[in-house]
Length: 409
Image (cartoon, rainbow, N blue to C red; front, side, top):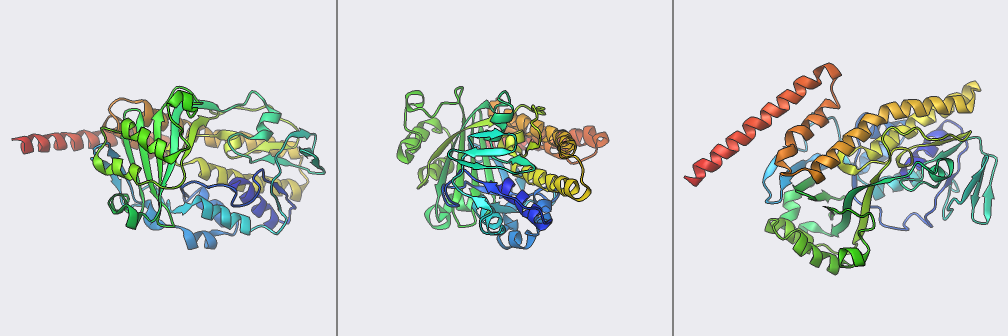
């Protein structure tokens, strides 16, 4: 919904009439998940283009840029301080707060709540017994399980990655879980072991959002008959995690025990990288509907917001200059695929590194840091960057091993 709302906001600012049809019944229909880091050239640029950067700044957490990568024993393999700007600005904002900003930015009546799309015929939309027509352009910004995408190209479907994820929450963490609160340090901590990963993210309300990931072969892993417990029941899930993470350090196991409230199981899916979908006149896709990826690169929402910014410019030019709608949309889609394809590849590679590589995190640190760094430098410098990162970690781990040997003596 974020993508559709920011697109609508940008188009309204250009004097173009828009309607947003949302399947959820109301703004607070369900939990909106964790926190998002918006990047300088994509997510934050889109907020500026929408005239909402001031509202974003009111809730952006620049101290939330702290990030650490640790192993199951809480040994640190990388720390990025909150003041580190080597990757540009990446302030955090709660997804629910960003959604609220975007919804409130639209004129009353723009969003039609409780409208689940069932069919498209030409430029007519069918929502059960309700029909809307007369649109010049239809944009599918309806997420991972996009109905618009399903209608225009049934073969363009999400593929399961083999990763199961459970979302948990620790409310008022400074009081209820002071140890993990101090470890998270108002930012994010990513803990990895082979086939296992737990992410801890500080939220704006003082809670800590937890994502516990496991390798599971079946996308329907949350069926109690397959996993052996009810993954929507918090106590049953915590009991199962006692066994699953039994060899993890006491601090991280205790954080799982202290979870309260929601318990949401998911299966991570992606869309085929660089896929060129079948077109229907006057219809396009953006965001997760066009290029769903896993969260491991932290790029999904940023690419989606950039999609909206660039599509708004395309539509404005079509309206202003009387250009052919489909010529404009075809050009937009071609440029979007070229722009997003390497980001999709990065997210896929990082998912493979973190979830399917023996010896993580130590075994993948040089590759992971290199992939992040290479995506931000000219191609001619990438071999040099990669070599530099690998040499750094070679010496880092050699020194750690020498230190351990000295301590043992």
